Length: 362
Image (cartoon, rainbow, N blue to C red; front, side):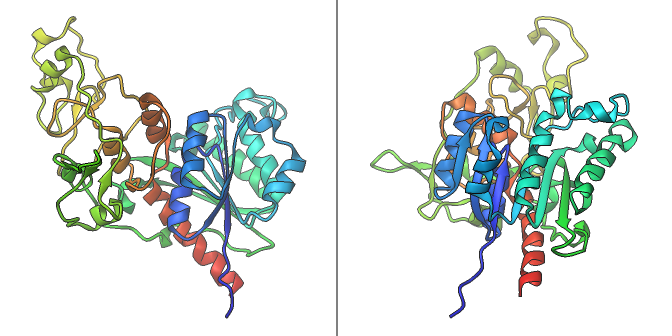
């Protein structure tokens, strides 16, 4: 019997592992992750037990160590910062710009490993910044490494994520492996899911004799079936309410409303320039606004209760299954969730990459 071939992924600037979770769901073997954030790498290691994970300044990771630990990696993924690419920044200085340091570290790993396929995730403004200068330079640099590069802005809500979140995705296929370009039009889109679909069943839950929180109702939608653990247990569903003055304000905000629905007398100053996301109450019947990294501010609130979503509710809005366990203190968990790429978005890309790899090797 022929052993099934596995494909290995290395996740650079991995955070807690949103991209890797998506690739794992698509059948990839997560070979490793590297990030400077301690709690994020603890979470990564906890969820990808066999991966070689490093909490380290990536610039100190030697070429010899890359070859020793990751030489057989098929795909490199990651989200390196690229803020220093600008027409005002002369080419010879780009590599010296500290804002590009991590991007060129990504390139160093590519040069050492020469993977079949690479993927970069970044802010959507990367594709339009400076009349496209930044993405053109990145395309030139990666193209010089013998990769066919394509890119597109993707909205996570098109791929089953109950959240509006637009990100720039760049994919490169090594020319001597398969001289094609990645076709974003072949990504499989999913039906839109909603806030209610993601977190409605968490409004009420039971507690078992041993203190575990358990969902007792049936998983009645495809998203809920995907999110549930086998035993229906829920972690990180600890309820924390904000200060009373915040509750007094948010109780006036209807679903889908924001700070403008709060009576003027409840504000300490008469400000009319607050961002539209301030005191935003989620609408259960549509997608969430973009989940961010904070938990102390008042950028978005639960659709029913006068509080922000819990860590688990936020994770579900990002499409993390309940089996994905976050590690560290509460504030760190919120940051890990908010910084992550939604796993179902990553899975859509990973599914298409898996087809390319299988078609080549069969």
